[in-house]
Each structure stands twice: as structure tokens, then as C-alpha cells.
Image (cartoon, rainbow, N blue to C red; front, side, top):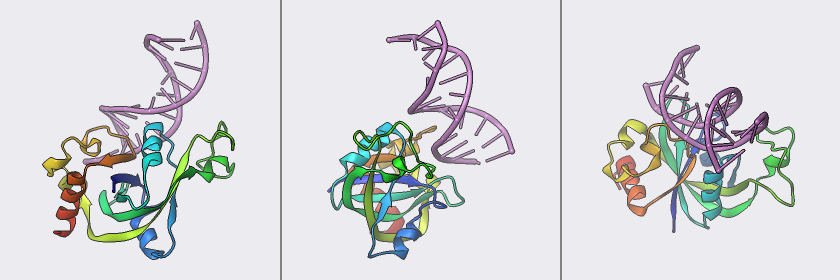
Length: 154
DNA sequence: GCCAACGTTGGC
DNA sequence: GCCAACGTTGGC
């Protein structure tokens, strides 16, 4: 099993949205950065993904989801009415990928960026570096478990 | 709302 | 292929 962290603006898609539909996976779409897309494409079934809420009141890791469907062409890139529409993308050669994920757990409290920065395990994680914009990134098992431990005590 | 950091675009 | 201009991200 691999571990990942993925950013989202909770106004658009939050851990609550996953929690509200525990039996129905949601599509993780709208990734429009090549490095992030390449990581997204590497996700495998049952990989665990930390959900990070950005650009919001409570910035930080809010919970965990699981991959239920590996990468497939992101339909929003073909939809002219979508904010994620990409004119240069074609059905034959799609640029962007999406995956499906389902709810695993929501932390009682968002693990804030400030607290995340106290974890020495995350020193090499792009997340805590100034100016970082990568929205999907791999985590080592020790990174994942350090976050889980700080969030839940487990 | 501000602004630094970064990725992408496009002229050359 | 370089690089300046531009648009976006994202914390504060």
C-alpha cells in the first residue's frame, strides 16, 4: 500500500463530502499540474490518501480517504461548462487524470499546518516547504504514520 | 486583500 | 532553448 497527500479547497470538496457519502466514492478531479497528475496516475487500489484542506479557515490535514478506482481520463477536461475545461485536451489524447476515492475517517480536529511543521518526519516533505504548490504528493509510511499519530494518538 | 513563490505561455 | 510576462497557488 502506498501513501499520499492531496490538497483540496474544502469549499469545493472536503472530507465532510466524503463522510456524507461513505458508500459512494467521489471523483478526485480538477488536478491541472503535470507533476501532481503524474503522482495521481501512480495511485493504486486501496492506497491511503491524507486529505489536506487549503485556502480556508482551518488549514491542515482533515482526514483519510482510500483509492477505489485508479486513474482514468478526467471528464471535466472535456466539459466546456466546467472550470476545469481544457481546450487543448482531446478524448484520444487526454491530458488530465482523475481517480475515485472513498471515505475512511475524519479527524476530530484538523491537524493544522503549524502542528504538521513540528513533525521532524515531514522535514523532507514538500508540503511544509515555503512556496510549495504541489497538490498531490507521495508520503513515506513513516510520514503517514507520524501524521496519523499526531492526529489520533494511534 | 496582500504578496511571495512557482508553473506555464509565448515571442524571439 | 531562453526568459520575461503572466496567471495561479496558498499562507498569512
